[in-house]
Amino acid sequence: MPSFPETMPKLLSDPLWKDQPFWLLNFFEFKRDDAGGIEEARAAFARYLSSAQRYSQKVLGRDVWFEGARLVSTRCVSAFPESHGVWDAVVLYEYQSPQMLVDAVVGNSDYAEAAQDRFAAEVRTTQVAVKPTWLTTEHGGIEDSVLAQATRYADGFWEESVKDKALQSLDEPQSIMPDPAAIMAQFAPGPEQRIDPERSLLALNLLRYRRNADVPDGRSLYHEYANRIQAAIAEHIPQPRGLRCAVSPCMTLHGDVEWDEFGIMEYPRLAALAGLESLPGASEAMAFRARGLQNQGLVLAEPQLCNGFAEGPFRAATDEDSVALPAPHPVSMAHWSQD
Image (cartoon, rainbow, N blue to C red; front, side):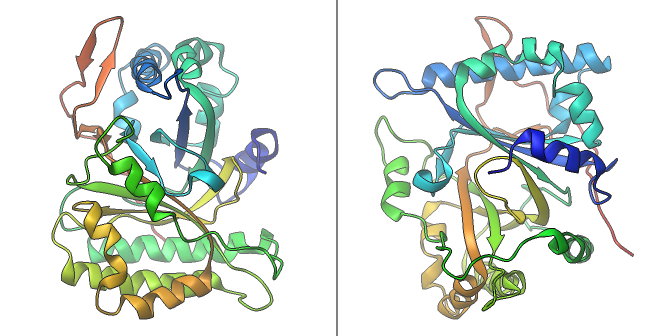
């Protein structure tokens, strides 16, 4: 199980990560009240986001926190709650380098003060470092040239990083099929509902590929599945749909699984995601997925903030009164290329 004392030195020294921008993917499980509710924790987490905004202004001299927030959601559904956790919120945040994360957050007493409401809200967290490529909620997905650029980078990164990845045992169980009943229960009307099933949603995919004596290169098999299923989605599912974050290298800093790659898909509503297997050509594509994928972490999220732009009814509080997010403003998008 990766933990910060083990992974931070690697993040700071590995040439694939050192001195380079990256995204920190944070999943949070909230505390429950006596009735199992999370509204109190969700309100505390909103106060934390306001505190983080004030903290960035104090540390960096300007209000930049929202600019680095690639994705914020406190309305999430966990597809693998038993094996990977019941995640109630996600923050995908961009840092200019691993050293910036250390200087601004890890061991910083000012940040610890700003994060008191976060600590009051959470039960546990998982953190995964992600190589930035592209994230958008604009309909139409990722331009072919940008996707090709991101794919070249991810392929080169994989070739280097896989040298340090141990083979899996042949008897290691797969965990790639979510429990449909567990997902539907969180979409059903009532006190447990997390997301409106008729609204568009983002599917955050953490991927761990098979690497064993029988399947030495599960990644190439899974990517064949991804190419086939995305073509079927483009033909049969209406907008908004498709790839919103090119599949990107990642490293688990703290959590229960050493993930290999990360990607985001968008669907117009829950029914579109649930109906993937019925699309023409899907069964053939799914065979590549079953052959190549060892573990999947899947979180469905309704975004309130994306790339510094307000996306929904998210409310952050500076004190006891809630205020809306500031007006959207332009942000710098991080691109990666490999010539």
